Image (tube, rainbow, N blue to C red):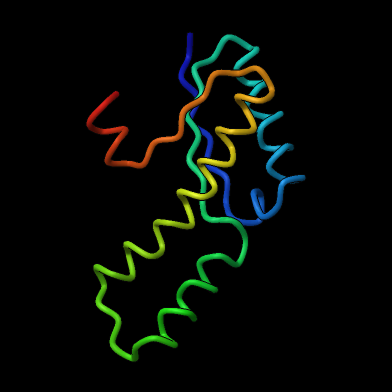
Length: 104
């Protein structure tokens, strides 16, 4: 059994319809007897929106806090995909990089 790593950018997951296309690609790879690991970006334009909102709060946003803020965009994407895959009958769990490193 091969392990396939798939990466989808923001435009690929920008809405629920596109997220369903991504889920179907993942399921197809899984049905071909592969372990599938998926990496997602934040949904389209989410990162830009979060950066703009941070700049509205402060002209000197620390790198640490900006990183923390931007990571929420990816967390939304991974949670939504996992919800969808589970609903489609495929066991899935969303993990941040930290969780993946420490648990799997």
